[in-house]
Length: 113
Image (cartoon, rainbow, N blue to C red; front, side, top):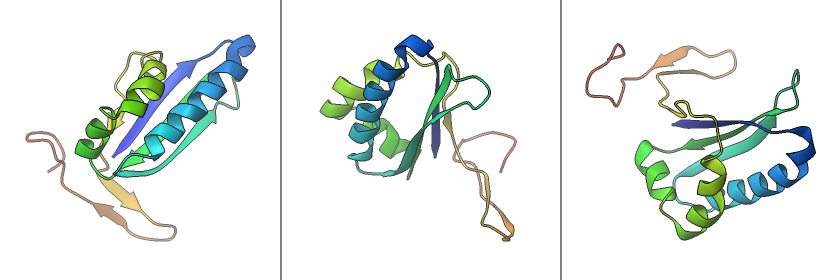
C-alpha cells in the first residue's frame, strides 16, 4: 500500500518543513508494517514536496497513525498536506525487465477484480 502526502511549501519555510518532515518520516518508519519511505521535492518547482511511504497493508498504516510518536510528530504535518486522496492500493507491479503482475483489489467492489 502506498501513501502520498503532497505539500506546497514557501521556499522561506523549506528548512523548517524538512526538519519536521524528517521527524515525521522517522516516527512512521518506527511503526510495524512500514516498508519504506522518502521525502521528495519537485524538480520543476521547489515549493512542491511529497512524503511517500509504503506499508504492508492498509491496516498497518492505519494502526501506525494511532501510535503516540506518530500522533505527536507526523499527524500534525500530514494535516498540512493537500486535501486529496493519499492512500493507494497496488493493483499491478513489475520488477526491472519483469512481467507485470496483476493482483485483486482489497475493495469489495471496483473495476479491478
